[in-house]
Image (cartoon, rainbow, N blue to C red):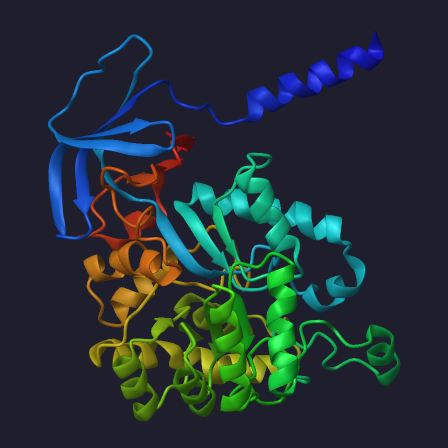
Length: 432
């Protein structure tokens, strides 16, 4: 009897904890609906949802048509599409002990943390994310979310990010010679065009959706300079061409101008961070229509931490954080004025997950209108991901990814920090 009762109890607990799937049809009565294409805020609209799709958007408040149908009252809310963050690290949790934890956490520990971070992100209104590099747990988490085993945003996973030896994603940087020898040759390290092609194929084999590389150093690594170029244009071109053959796009971590220009000329899909673009890099990105994923909140966060919490970072990181982090907003202003295309991304994992929407405030501080900022996380982000058929707008046929807020984000961008309702693929994960 005991052996039978334990599974039954587990099933009951799971059913109580799981979000409730909606009835045959769900009618969302929206006080105001933001049409991100036109920029219009439409009053008294009804969104009709069947299973995981939007099947209608109607003027006025439509009554339920059948006994199994459900009406959700959002008549005092502003409703908009589910938000998309194109640069997160769900496996990462910011901590003073981050470097030590690299030696003490098991993959299962990382996985449990990542699942919690995923749910926090979803409840913050971000229904889709592009995970730009982890250990491979990110890809497993993507699968678990897609199979309905755990709640979380839709995940587009880069698997393990590819780096040159000694580069930003070389996890052996700063270790003793003995520790480097024990680590062997990490599979994500590649030098020269042939190794770069092999590294792309390795991530493809392991199930990655896209390729992430670093063409410059970074802030949160132990290298003395986060701006220098770390890949040749020939190496990046080998990565891009191989990824294209496999139907994959390439996201490129880059801070310094030379590494940015090499990556753009080689054909990467996006430059992430782009902190120190010079005028030539900005003109090149505008001409080639390369996406810019700015991650302003990450720069603000690490600079503030280095300034206000002495000893939190090793000295080499604190110096870079104060240098690079304080320049990102100015770069953003120059790039957007020059017509560079922007897709929303935050680098969540460098700061606390669930705070992603703070990025909107930094974007508007730097001169972008609230509407255009919202478009970066809806229309633009969907285009960057190649998912415009399913994501980015509230329209018939799209996935039922829907967020409701108190307040009007076109007048108060901070309203995006306060979602009261979050639906992903027709299931509500937050309803207040």
